[in-house]
Length: 450
Image 1 (spheres, rainbow, N blue to C red):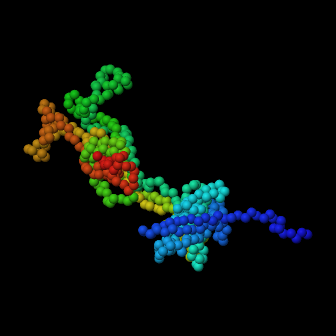
Image 2 (image 1 turned 60 degrees about the horizontal axis):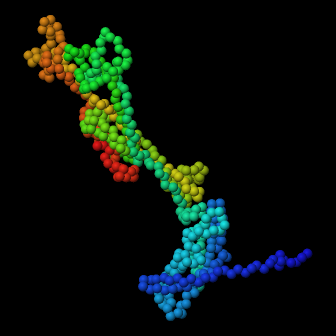
Image 3 (image 1 turned 90 degrees about the vertical axis):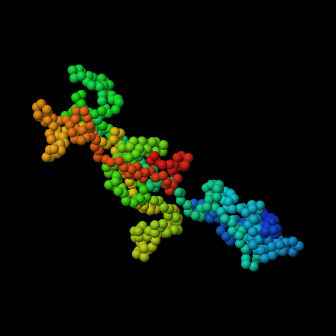
């Protein structure tokens, strides 16, 4: 059996000289200036870890020996120049040597290739003395991290993307306006159209043409200037304005009694991103208001190695923990960013308004079968026909006396004009917010109610 060791048959390896380079670094301290000379040796072998390989990314380590070979016996040298500040200036010179990028030591952020498919960049650079007694020899360690891009990324601190989702209370008001045909009403006044001859027949087209209105409204009465015994009801179209908006919190008590039975006293113009809704005075009346409490789940990032942002305990989040551990605030030990939801209460306020282009009043013929009479025991007397003596309906004056000349129509309504309608609408369109929705150039911040 051969006694030759395998290594005896190996070819002698070619000797490789490690690069050794001297670099001059000049630093200043105020008006003082001095030059240091550093000798750098590349040291690929070290007791430190050279490479760390895992499924996420790889790490590498490069080390260099840096020796201060400055001639301190020269007539002019840094020791004489800086005196007691020598140590500080040596550190400054070492920093300049590395950060300046003029030496063989790669600077932080530099790209280095180790043959992997991804980029590797210098993450940090450490400077230390080799031993306590050797004060002129330093070891410089470059910590290199593999990254998927050519840019330097600080992955030591966990990061979470910022959500661009706006909470409900930062959203603008939702506005809808629709119209519908309501039940017939006798307002006392209507638009006149062409008459029809009861002895003739008409088709749909001719009825449509004769039924087109023009001009202003007139009293609904016959050609004898008397109201019809059974006044017809006219179907009409009303509009409904609905507005809904969320608020983080309420602004205080709301006096609903001041809203019900009111109508806008002045013209209101709503500007919704340039779309103008105009409501003349006396046409818009609140009919509904609703306040609903809501719950919003605000996303919060739970970073690795940190306590639960809402101080939730292990017992509140998980089953199976003992009593001692269950009462401890949970810590994220997964190494991943976890999104938790913080419940926040807010309110959603909705209101509805009825729109009538002709207003909310009705007019009734001022006619009756009695008139005022101060000489009578009950203050009034019947109106009779002069010839037959039977009761007769007649027009009345504002003084309650029968008249053959005046034809007065009395007006009534169930709403009163108020500025509270305009004030309520303004609450749905605040002129300022805690976030930037648009710029002043886009007319943001201007009054919505005009």
